[in-house]
Length: 504
Length: 61
Image (cartoon, each protein chain N blue to C red):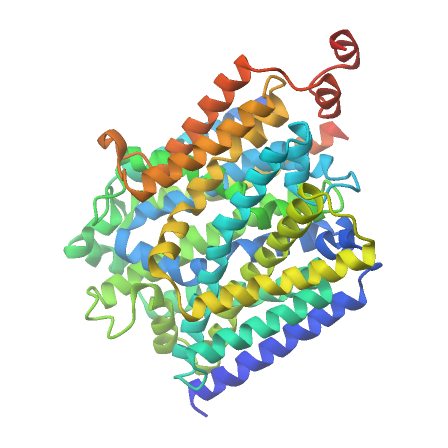
């Protein structure tokens, strides 16, 4: 049996198992409420929480794109996992814990609910927060579908075409998400994390079996590719300023991504505040700091030019590597690994974006009143729409817009960070401050990425500018505008009862 | 160790990790020093963070 045929069988077997897990999620649902559908009744335990958080984080980009970037830009790209890890460690037990604590209120389904409450249920803050999440994450979801479809077509040797792959994946996603909601997604995430981990560890073992890695590094150090191993890298991007500023912005922006905070809200108890960051730091070290750069450097030694890649693009290096160096059954299984990486991100994103669109915008902002049965029906319909539309976009990807939105994914979310973080810790943060901070932060992202590429020639990462601008705006506007009510401050533990009474 | 000590260790690691790639060049037994430093810092951070968070939760309980 050829590897392509075997890969096709494995792919369909994998899809069948995910459908089964979605159905199992449906069976275990505790009542037909929107709370159960979107947050699994806030009952996800610490280990399931870790698996679902990690699976959502490790996307098609981890599996494919990161190898391509290490291959083209060198070690400087480690700024991303290092920044994410360190800020995860700092933000999870502080901001993450506060999100978890305030989400214990049965009325809270999303972080938007908490932020809106902190800023006196201001409709503009709610709308800005919700729309930022939807706009800047939606195309990232579409890109995952594009990635997975390319991989499936490539690995099955065209047995499954690009369009057929996109359509099949979308149908399976829609079925298991609408069936099991968050519970179904969490169960499939466990499978997806196991497959992804097994695949990447197989790659690491293969590297050590087949190559003398020390010799690989020594050859690279004296070759044309030597720039991969030191700053500022072959493309001259990663100088000290760009590295340091992207380190901060990647870490802060990433923590605000909606599929992550939705896992914090779904967590049952505070032990998740330990298991999730510890597990994720371990996973990121292994996958993004050790395995993917090593694959990239071995590839740079084996196939130093794009011509030598023989028809594979840099972000498909891992596919070629597995075809050539892994036993056939394992190489075929990598298809399931790549599919798992992409699907776990798409399912998490479409569920949380659905909760934002339906609950934050339709239900809360427009003040719509529905009973629980109607709510869950609509929640399922909206959840199905996201992967469906993302797939339609994936069939004819609008390159420029997609590229622009991907570039802004980290940067845009740093515009939300000051309103969230300072909102939890600084009593003086006001509603006007939050409005202007988010608005001007987003405007800065669009200006810098859209045209003014390198303001003042400082080589500062765009997301860092956004973070600085939104923080400064939040502080300055807050200091000159009316503070939020004492009731709100007391709710968030920012004013003592007696202080609040004096203010009243 | 108290929370303050753990916090200081984490801050030092944070600073080291920010400096790891751009500052250090050369190799140790053929392996790029900034790559080894990144991996070493991550592993150390994982261990220390584990102790830190365990200590923090114990105090909160």
